[in-house]
Amino acid sequence: MQLLRDISKSRVSLVVTGVFALLMVVAGSERLFSTVSPTSTNSIERSAQHKAQRMIAAHQNEYRREPLPNELSAIQQQAYYIAHYQDRYTSYFKKHDFTLSTKQLLKQIQLNKNYEPLLQRLDNLDSNNRAGVTEQLKDIKDSILQQALQRTIYRSAIIPANDIERLRNAFMQERTYQWLKINHQYLIEEEQNTVNNEAEIQSYYETNAFPSTATAQIQYIRLKAPTIKRKPTVKELNESIQSGRIAPPKTSKHHLEIYHLTTQQGQQWLDTQDIRKQIDEAEIPALFRDQQQLHYTKTQTMSLAEEALGKHKLPVLPSGKSTFVKRGQQWQLIRNRSITTSTCTTTQCQQTTVNAWQKMMQQDQLDKLSARIQEEKLYHPKDISKVANTTNHKVETSPSISPHKLPKNLQGKPLEQSLFSSKDSSTHNRISEPVLLDSGDILFYQVIAYQPVVKRPLEDVRKLITTELHKQHIQQKLKNDLSVAIKQLHNGDGIDTLSKKFKARMHYSAPNTTLNELPTRIREAALNIPSGNIGWTKPVLDYDAESDTWYLMSLRTVVYTNKNNSSVDNIITDERLSNMLRNHETSTIAMDILS
Image (cartoon, rainbow, N blue to C red; front, side, top):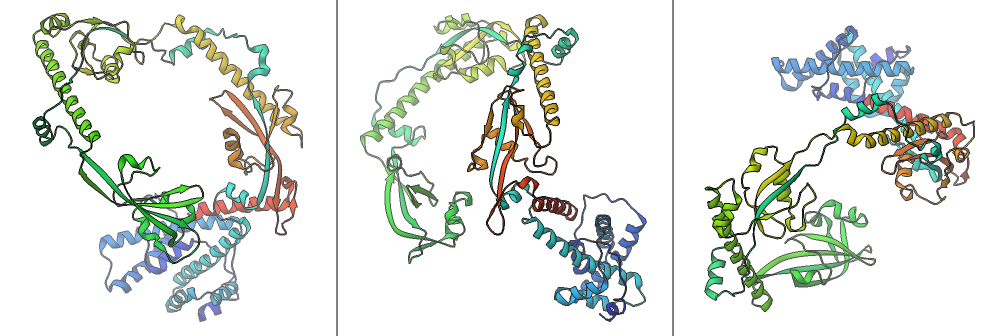
């Protein structure tokens, strides 16, 4: 402390470091920045040497021994990276002429007791070690100034987050927008397709695929599941259930507790921490998310079968889980305490079991038919007609088939993939593996005609190419005309002056319209107003490819509320707002440097 008083008459230029670097150096908790590739300079190296010496001394004091070779290497690397970041801060703050005198430093230290340990270390340094004293003094000054700078930026920017939309919402109470919805209708005289540049057409053809559609024609054997009308005996049912081929006739009951919630505090409540173990955080309504207790007015218990839950408009929950449900204006917490299962003896349950047995028998019969055809395929792998004659099945021939366009009686994704997804055309001569159709039937097929995907000839797609190129030409001309028109707007002229030129009607948002209520494209464009690179009055140009439309948009009026709650118009020219945005940009730069 005495050392500082001795030099308090002098003014030392600030060499800035981040507060995190200071804390890491003093506390000995530096972290390794392994992803940075530092660029060596003499000043950085000298600074790194001083920091490494201090870090080695801190290591010795803490562990009562010299650093091991690997620890020494890590310390030296940490010191180098810290010095590297200090150099970044130095460049930034020197550019803006931020300085702090030793007298100001003493005053700040007296107001902040957090610096007392630093001063004790400074006093313990050898007074002959000027380099060590200077380095420690710089760190203390840097920390104080950096904190002061951050407080100033935060106050001036209102919100410290790097988010212009949040900054705008902090003071703007009302904004209205105006926009033109423009397409190429005003270029009606150029609507005739006049693309005749053969080189451009040829280039477009060569750089695009223009694939043809693959087609196929097949002969096939269809296996239909036989109808099983016979009901099983008790013995057959029991054997099927015991073997696990069909499920036993059981019913489940959900035992629920329903809490009618309230925001008024009372004597009945639940611990929110317990609720969070049974439900995702995102499912908790915002009304209750920050509460430690959930108060309720009454509870009710219900035990319902799963099919009865829907009748009562209750969700199906796993055992031990909860959820929130809103009925009118009343929130309810639904808890599923447990689920019990029991043997079902109702007529409906018994019929369900019988249906499952009949379906199982149908599948068994279908599997036997399929296995018979698979066996015959071994003898006639490329002749589906012989296989059909041997197994007493009929061979059918399909019309021409293409992807995504299958006949109604051959609908099924597996068939489409089997026919058109394989690049191996040699398999087309053989009888296929069984393919399941959407109807439940099984298909064996053999391809008799196949046209693969090829590039369509130029003459077949010339009209498509010229149409697309013409569209691109029109779009480019429209974009150029819009860009020129914006640049030619006189000072103070709004985009409404372009309405006649582009044969487009002006659209306006209502004064009480929120940003989320605007049309999607307008809302996305509005997020760019205001910003440092666009400005308040410059229009925003946005293209929507889906509707092939350009949107030319700008602010129309802005009203915000000042500290006296009085409305102020024409915020575009308001000097205080300009200062706010400028300070916010400074904050953004500082955040980037200090991150």
